[in-house]
Image 1 (tube, rainbow, N blue to C red):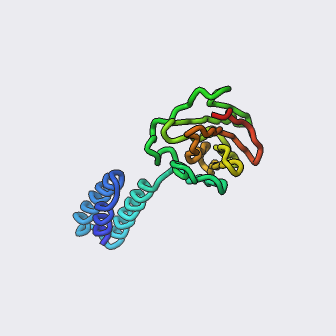
Image 2 (image 1 turned 60 degrees about the vertical axis):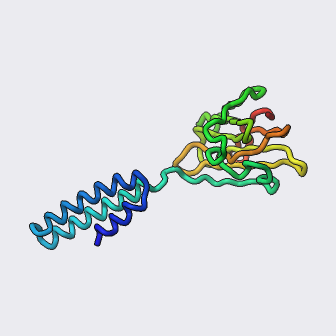
Length: 194
C-alpha cells in the first residue's frame, strides 16, 4: 500500500519530489525483496523506514521561505503592478538600484544589528524596498504620495529569517516613491523620493 502512495506522489510533484521518491521507491523495492527473509517485526521496521523516507520527501518539497506579514494602506493597490511582489511582475529579475539623491542604500543600527535598507526600481513596473540583517519587529516600507494622502505597503521580518521586501509600488508616470526602514514603530532610515 505504501508503494501506491509513493508512486501516486511521484507522478504529481516537482523534480525534487521525483528524486526523493525515486530513492523511496528503491527502498520499497528492496523491502519487497527482503520481506520473505524477515520476521514480522522486521517488516514493521522497513515500513517505518519507508514512511520516514516519504516524510523526508514531503519536507524537502515544502517551501523553506517564511511568509512575512504584508500590510498596506487603503489607497495602495489601485495602480498597475501594485499588489504584486517583484518576482511576480513582468520586470522580474531586472530591478536595479537607481541613482537616488543621497543613495539607494541606507544603513541603521538597531538592537545590535547593522540593518541595510535598499531601494530597487524598474522604469516599466515601479519600485520596492528591501531590508537585510534585520531582527523581528522590523519592516521594509514603500510609499508614494496619492491624491488622498500617502499610499504605502510594508512587509515585516518573520521568525527565522533576517530580511523582508515589499510588494511593488507604482512610481511611474511622474509619481514618486521612497523606501523606509521601521523597527518597532521607529523610523530608522529612509531614501529620498525617486
